[in-house]
Image (cartoon, rainbow, N blue to C red; front, side, top):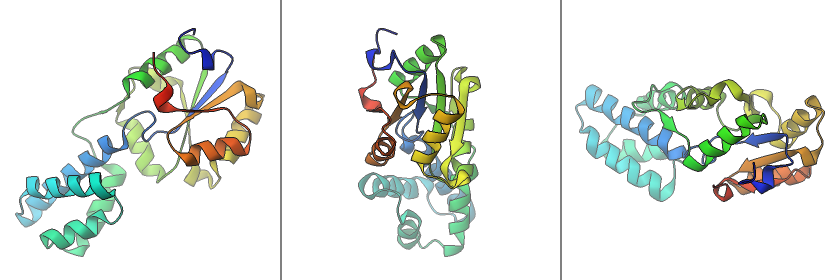
Length: 202
């Protein structure tokens, strides 16, 4: 795997999902689309206007408090919070989630080299599993091992260490691929090599 010199001596690769393997917004914007359509059907309010508002708020301020802002803006009953939350967990997306091109190529190379691929992801386990099920893996799904931090009630560092122990590997045999300071910090807690996903390219 000469095109990835930083990975040539690693046996196992540990990834997060959101903004590492695919953009988190690709899932959320489809959830917002479905919610806007639901409100149009239920309350006869314009779906496109609602979606445009939600997209702008999300892009400018993130997803925190988005339902409350939208409900206030369009006079949507608070009871719809349940539907909004439920869609995050089990939405049937109009479009499959697509891996970043560089990550798809990287994962394909890892499979060809018979390296182990592990996903350790935070967030609601049901929601994260829903994302995994609706991702276009291009045949890679059968090579994935997945751990949900909230389901295990462990920190990422603890899960990383358990993965090493269960595979009889040392710290130098693994590489964590992340996209934020939390992933980097958790890796450093047990001296695991870490790389930002954006730095992986062909």
